[in-house]
Image 1 (cartoon, rainbow, N blue to C red):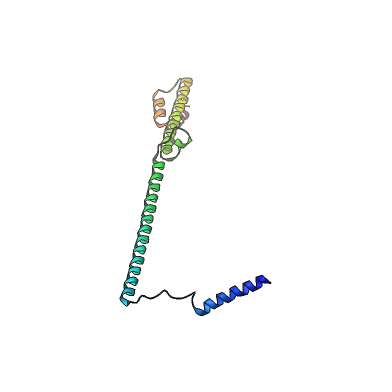
Image 2 (cartoon, rainbow, N blue to C red):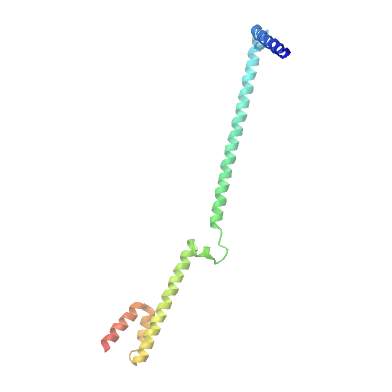
Length: 157
């Protein structure tokens, strides 16, 4: 019962203050209207300076972010240009890999030419006919030289 009385008294006080306007009174006006204009002008100047400071801070943040992105881009470019550590799997791909594949193809052609020349040499020795010229032709032209030798050999029979 006492709590209800206390709540009603508090509510009456709040309503009384709101009705009398003590809560929402405007700040007191200075007696001199020129002084009020000066205060308003200083308040506007202060707000303008705060806006300029905020703007400059945001511009600096943007510039820092731009520089950070440029540095990150440069770091990424440097990672791409780093040389490979060793002749592992990575060395067979990319620009170095193309060169390695070309050298592999050249080596394979060389092996095929030598094997065909050995076949021509053995055939010449077995038949006791022909000359070393066919071996040189086969070494230089590879498959085509061996094919011509085989056609000429068939014509000899």
